[in-house]
Length: 406
Ligand code: T4K
Image (cartoon, rainbow, N blue to C red; front, side, top):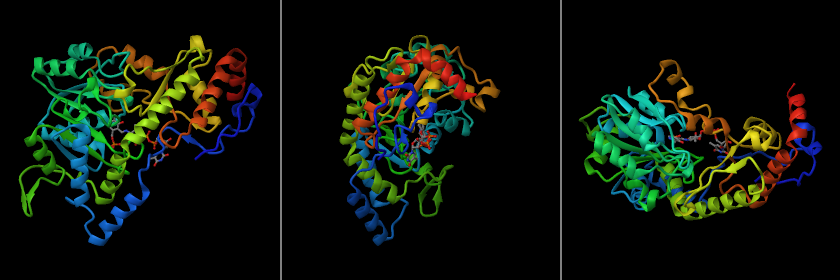
C-alpha cells in the first residue's frame, strides 16, 4: 500500500515543480479488492486436487448461484469477461441492426456490439445520473433499432423504468451493461432483474472480481439456456452442437476468486462508501472541483469516485490537475475520455448520433480518483489537500505549470 509521505503547504513542494512526490508508490484508481485469501487458495487447491479446472465446474456453478442471489436474477451465466458476456447476450437475443446506447462508457460496451455486426447509435446522457437519458434515447430510436443498451456508469444507475417504457413502446429489446454496478440497486430494484438481460464484469479492477470474468443475468430461462450453450461453442451434449457458439467460459480458479469476492462484497462496498464520504468532506471547500453527487449513496456501490473540474472556477483545468497529481504518484484517470463517438472505428464510420453536449462536457472535465479497499483514508485526505493546494494557488500555479511543460 502506498505510504503518504507528508502534507504539502506550498507550491514549491509540488513534484511537478521539483518537490518530492507525495506518495512513495503509485496510488491507482483500479487497485483490485481481494477477499479472504485463505478461502481463495483453499478452493484453488481443491480445484487442482480434483483436476477439474474449467468447463461447467463446481465453483462456477456455485458462483452463478450466489451471483443470482446477490443481483436478484433468476438465472446467471458466468463468462470469461464482461465483453464476451455482452456479445453472447446480444447474440442470444438474436439482435441485428442498431443499438441505442451512451457514448459515455468504457469502449468495450460499443466494441462488443460492433464486433458482432451491430451498429451503436449514441444518445446523450442525463447530467445527474450520467447514464443514458431516455428522452434523448427516444430521439435516436428508429426503424433500424434492435435494442437499447443502458449502461450503469461509475456505480450510478440508469432510469430503468423510463428505458423499460421506451423499449416496450418501440418493441425493441433492452439490455443493461452493469459491468461497473454489481451491488447497486436502481430505484431500489434488484440490478439483475431489469430489461431482457444485464451483463456484469468481474475484471480485476471491479468492486468484485474473478481476475478476469463476467456474467449474464436474466429472468428469462430460455435466454439463459441459449446463452449458456453459446458460451460453450453451441454444445448441448458431448457431440451435439445446435447453434453458433464461442468460448466464453469462466475457469474454476476465476470462480474461486469470485466466490470470495461475493462473500466480501458488502465490506468492499462499505469501504467505497466511506471513501466517497472522505472525498466529499475533503473537497467540500474546493471551488470548481465538484464531486459528482449521489442522490442515494445507499443504492450505489460507489465504485468510481469522480469529480468534475470547472476551470473557470477552479483556475486549473482537468488535464493540468491530472498531470499535477500524476507527478505526486496519484494516478487519476480521465474515464472514459474521449468517448466512444470520438474513438475508432466509430469516429471514421460516422456512426449515427445526435448532439452529445452533456457527454462531451463530462468527458472533457471529469477525473476519477483513486479508491477501493487499497486506498486508506489518510491517502484520500492527502489527495484532497493536494487538490486544495493547487486550486487555492491556481493563479500563481498556471504560469509555472506552463513553464514546466515547455
Ligand atoms: N462495459 C463497461 C461499462 C466496462 O467498464 C467494462 C470494463 C466492460 C464493459 C468490459 O468488461 P471486461 O471485458 O473488461 O470484463 C479497465 C478494465 O480492463 C476494464 O475491465 C474496465 N471496464 C475498465 C473500466 O477499466 P483500463 O484500460 O482502465 O485498465 P488499466 O489496466 O489501465 O487498469 C486501471 C487501473 O487499475 C490502473 O491504474 C492500474 C490498476 N490495476 C489494474 C489491474 C488490472 C491494478 O492496480 N491491478 C491490476 O491487476 O480498463
